[in-house]
Amino acid sequence: MERETPSCAAREAVAAIATAPGPAGIAVVRLSGAGALEIADRLCPGAGEPPSAWPGGTFRLRRLRDPATGEPLDEALVLVFRAPRSYTGEDAAEFQVHGGRAAPRRVLSALLAAGARPAGPGEFSRRAFLNGRLPLDRAEAVMDLVAAQGERAARAAAEQLAGAIGRRTDAAYDALLALCADVEATLDFAEEESAGLLPPARFAARLDPVRADLAALADTFREGRLLRDGALVVLSGPPNAGKSTLFNALLGTDRAIVAPEPGTTRDSIEEGLLLDGVPVRLADTAGLREGESGVEREGIGRARALAAAADAELRLVPPGVPVPSDAGPRTVLVFSKCDLPGAPAPDALPPGAVRASARTGEGLDAVKAAILERIGADPAGSDGRGAAVNARHRALLGEAIAALDRARAVYLARGEEAAAPAAAGLRAAAEALGGVTGRVYSDELLDAVFGRFCVGK
Image: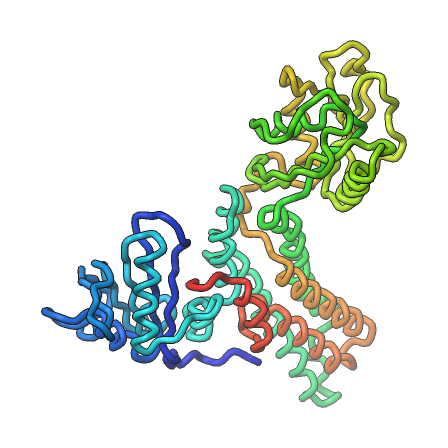
């Protein structure tokens, strides 16, 4: 549906714990919706004005009690927000209680008993969107910022939260609607007035810059996927090639067992690390050979499957082992144990290959650089500035670009006679772009977007 001017109408009050479980200095319990402040009153009996009487944007220290039993719950900092000046656009309250599991759960249970219902995943952010407080792309950025694994991912999410993507798609949306209005105006002209109609060359001159900017924005998807989801990098090669030793060296810790006996690694071992701010899942696998037991053969089969699915494969080639002939475009040949006799000289390496010794540390930086090159990360560090689109954004941008291409082709081929189909293509492109920020949305879309959120956000 086309998004309407929000009314900020309050929905039933919902509550949830907004901070992660576990020991901490504080925990936050969030409450929002119709009657939220009156529900907060029930947990704050005694002397002084109740929260429902406080001005918005104020906070006070209160002793919380169970409204049913009068039992003390905790001493908390209670914050009051009034519609529309709150995160959700509704009347809301937050309770900053002591951290840990018990205190926030006790406060949440009391709020539910006092009339609130449990919030669903992303319900606070969904309400913020529906009440016009947060465009859809910025709501997604909130979750990306929460899930960011490194500085570059956090910067990209912060740029998106500041509107870097929405500004570009909104500008394109407005430009396409303006062009569509001019094209549709030709339908009202009589044939003798055709001299004032929009020429095909002028149509293309207005459409092409918009398409180019959308294509450039769509091209940021790979960077966005790497920053959000990371890349799978698999170490493979024959037994005793030094995979586990290199695995440990890249991680900077003894995570995998290293032993001279072939077949020590029977199954894959995965650990995460950051390379130049890009999250990487590094996987050590069983040595590739004809396994001597069913267990080892299973491990080798899993190693081959994992390497086939990887974003990059580090194929280790120790001294005396022939160079593999099946290396693909995602494979980095690593001539391991280069401190031993028989290792190739640096100037004898195949293109794109590197030498490394996990024992001495030689070549580790070259291995890391090769990983970044294979997974398509910018080794200079783009910082994610300008933000990078996610899979949903890329799909919508693809729809918009395809619709623009159809509109352009028909208008340039048939001129003013194509006003109606060209206008339909322009409107289809604008509708797709409207889905990025939520100018156009459906309940199914909101369910898909906010269903990824954690409860309490």
